Length: 200
Image (cartoon, rainbow, N blue to C red; front, top):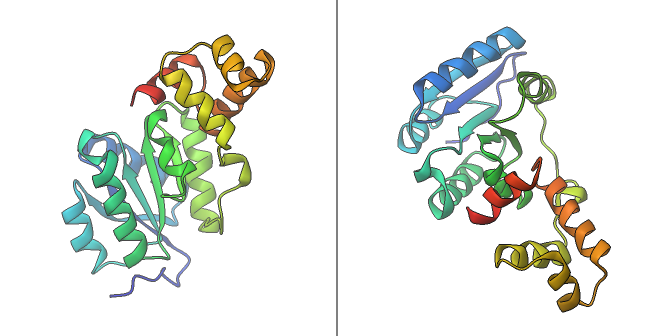
């Protein structure tokens, strides 16, 4: 069954996450932002979500990426299934910075970190709700270059920047710039976030 956006002025939203209190908080936040943002579905798992989506058209899916069973292959499998079945639905994941990889790779349409400020949440949700934001392709600034990936992989293997510079035949400043560029593109705030990302 096709799931097309509602033609009214309302923006219909589905919430999926195992934490009932988090979903309730997001619902309250959405209502305070704009009365046009309406929660039509609020469920705790993928099975319930699939059942509800088949009967209720939505514009935006806010999906938790915080639970351990939503990570890795299972998460990607469900995301791809949802995108194939409901191509007009905007998928936004809310999770820790480590899960922003799904955004960089283009698996999801938008991403909000659990560590973002309330102001950032409001701005992102309002942007999606007002314009039914759907980028045709991810901005090139979010695509990691092969050099940035190599630096991240070598950092993950425990190598320091000086050794990576020698190994890659690059200057220390160039390797440091590649690392900083990757951190910025991944939406990470500092070295601690980078360590979490590399070990996830």
